[in-house]
Length: 129
Image (cartoon, rainbow, N blue to C red; front, side, top):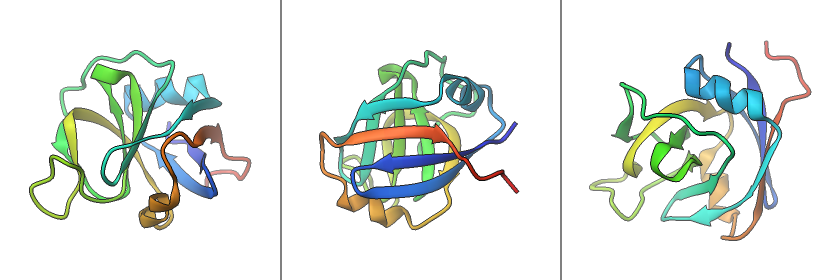
């Protein structure tokens, strides 16, 4: 399964694609999900009602635009630039995350989302093509 989702965060609305991982499947099955944005450098994360173990391929070094699930915080993460623990311009998670997908638009738009904003993940109404 790879499913297309819509991420609505504050004034930003963007399509994203979940991958075929077991964690992404759990997130898909839990949709729609709403939470409050926490902002940590150029990362937005929020707790979701999914409890998954750290995947064997989990990693802290992530790419701009990748979506992750943070097992320690049961959180969905949107990476769009350097975080406080980055060593260069790339995002770095606080601890390893399960990569669950990527955004299909310009990740930098998420810089407009203030902490405390409502974030909603929902299944896209458009068919994945």
